[in-house]
Image (cartoon, rainbow, N blue to C red; front, side, top):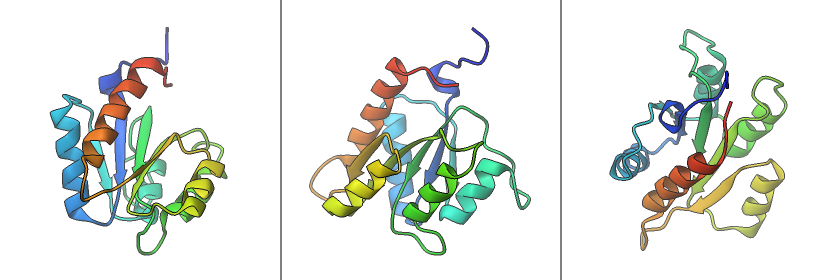
Length: 145
């Protein structure tokens, strides 16, 4: 069917200002044998430029799954979610949050902005691996366009 893509063609936009976390997520994706192309942004402003192909950035190819941190400079994760949900071209973008915040209020705010999942970064567990495994399962059962 035209417009449908296999899992390995889903672009991943990783939005996190912490380089160690970005490396951890990319390592976990490889460990789960996910060969998806990963694009990186350091904050919500840079991520929007990549999604829109603005300000000299090459547009990330669709379908796209965004992995989003909440606490970032310039434009945080909540502001980013508000911006894409108000944009007709980006409003249906799949977003998974991975953050250090376990605040019930933050979790509610994210789901109110229609995220697909919320993962809390933990120094005691394998949160990056759990995220990668969740994405693998998600992409196996959900059809993306």
